[in-house]
Image 1 (cartoon, protein in one colour):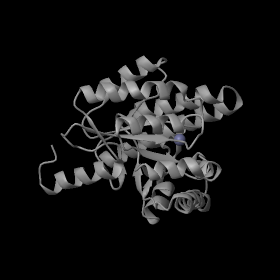
Image 2 (image 1 turned 90 degrees about the vertical axis):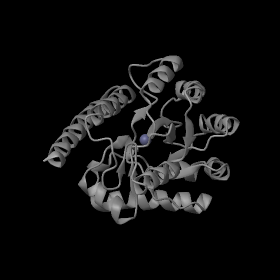
Image 3 (image 1 turned 45 degrees about the horizontal axis):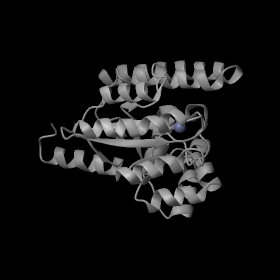
Image 4 (image 1 turned 180 degrees about the vertical axis):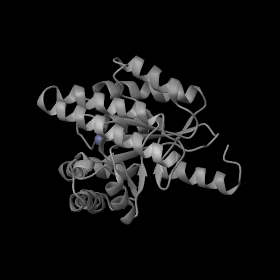
Length: 263
Ligand SMILES: [Zn+2]
């Protein structure tokens, strides 16, 4: 019963988000595209937060750990600044890469791998996957994985669908190729926060132990995100948080589960 309700909500989310993005293509693509993502983020909050058959939004850990995930790069406008920050703060993050960008900016992808970050699959060119047929979905996943592997030597089993939009076909394709689907519990970017300070304040107030935080270093203008990220890191560190990669977070959750006291 609960699964049926979740499925209905997910269908509603995708329908609404697609409608907004379709509108966005004919007018203010960026604004409406982000609005669709925000809408989806808000609706995701009513869904179960725990992992469900290989789909992760957060983990039920009590330790103060959070995984920073960074989508849509590499992008020479923003990625070097983010990498400099992470290096300075000695933080390892998880980058969900767009395969086409990896091919275009191989040095940046190599730097991410060299500096110890984890790379994940964010498709070849960031389509709305529920609008694609099965062969196209598989091609998006395979082309991105090849680009990452050929450029950096890193293989990946983490997948994040663009804008968090997926359906049964996307789920099955990802599962068949051995992926875990990694969504998020909080986003740095949100329509209600318009300055780096308000973005940081908002997301820090929402973060809970074991969460996965989404931010961006590509595609749109991410100047504000790049300015907000150091504030987020400083404030979360002050609250006693430590930063881990997605595989580390999942391993910690798995260990806690096997010891029988996830909380
Ligand atoms: Zn994306």
